[in-house]
Amino acid sequence: MTQLHTWKCVFTADHPLQAATMATALEAEGLTPQLRGMELWGVAVEILFSEGAAPSVWVPAMQEAQAQAIVERMRQAATPKQQDWLCQHCSEKVPASFESCWQCGNERPAAAATQASAGITTSEGK
Ligand SMILES: [Zn+2]
Image (cartoon, rainbow, N blue to C red; front, top):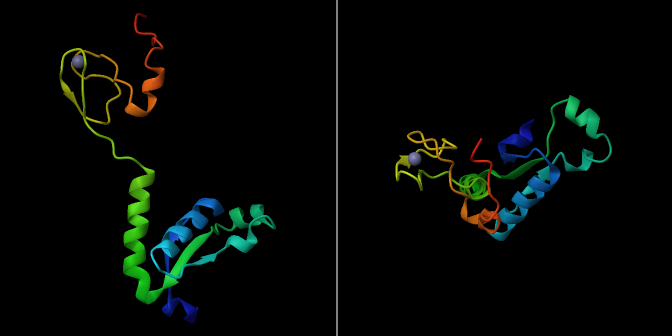
């Protein structure tokens, strides 16, 4: 495993597409990522899973810090940060982890992305 001295794994994906997306992002930043584990996909996926191998993205050691910063940025973009929200009923500020107001039980207002379906009434009156 002497190659590990010059190449660093900066990202391990659950899926080849994820790895490819990350590699593309790194390339866009001028890095020279290498995908590993990909060639096994489609040939022996089941074996791959059973052995715990996964597609991963590697970069030359000297690019590691920069690559990790990009990976981190990609991760944050992929998982939008949850924000505290204001209850529309009692104006209480509710932590992001709550799906309904901890004070009055009113449901969390729909996110901006789902505003299109705001007209659909939820089963509020049980
Ligand atoms: Zn409330």
